[in-house]
Image (cartoon, rainbow over all chains, first blue to last red; front, top):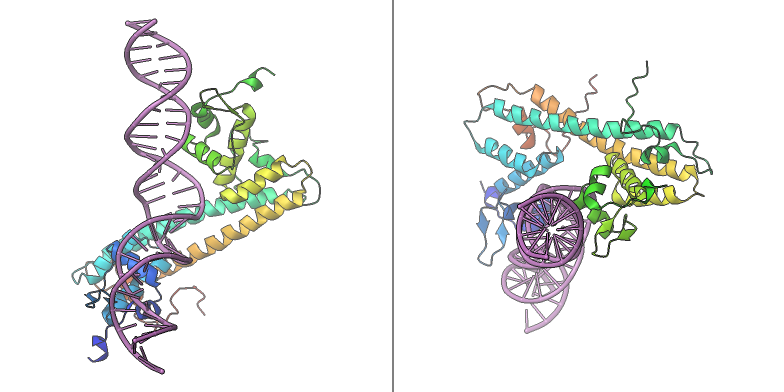
Length: 150
Length: 150
DNA sequence: TTGAACCTTCCCATCATGGGAAGGTCAATA
DNA sequence: TATTGACCTTCCCATGATGGGAAGGTTCAA
């Protein structure tokens, strides 16, 4: 129980958690996470428990959770009477958001690859990519390539 | 050659191009695209050619190009002596960026689905998702699920 | 005691977008 | 012709998560 009592300033906390000092201050400001102690001179002081929480936040950010979702996750983490179903629901909702975003990006990439595949890519100016952007072809909209050929 | 001479104010230009009036003003401000004319009272006036350019921008944004990339695309579009190879290179570079982002998001989704699949999702508190976020298991890092089992 | 390395808060910038205020303009109607 | 409502202008602010940097106080070791 000795090492647990050691309090460290923000620089060390940043190093130990992988969260930048800048972001630690930001999380403090928006009340996502605040270290439990301050020194007499106003320095933030972090315990091992605080570092633990920062690592939790870092890991959740790396998995794409927003600060607000992490707020929720932290609350569940602290709540000993939580239902794992709530955590799972939050995670799966996030997975759905990720999948939506992925589908959007894939549609963009698909269309661009399709257009590029028809571009000679030489020193001549004719270019189906620019033609598409300029709206040549599809009269109104209907751009986008699905690849569902016959 | 009659309809070509018609100049319209920003509201109509917005409707005709699908770009909001707000964004049209923004593109003007950052010099991505400025309408060629202003009325005596300072109203922006848009020609059919201007609308065409706005649609080009909209379409490019929808394909995920950044404003800076669009700047480049617009220049190529106007450049009659362009090489289609340059357009293609720009497009494929963007495709690469999209694919990188997609891969990142997929890794997140993969890991979360994996963790969630081990979560009971009931009214008990035990939860592998929180355990992972809290750093239980992998001592240092090594989180992430690749799915490359045996 | 001094100086380097650290900490604090505060302001600014990013990127593309929207909200809203204050004030000028235009066109149709009373 | 005067009014009115819909439009336009610019300007400021906010978003979300992050970083840069300034001005000034603190700590610690030499």
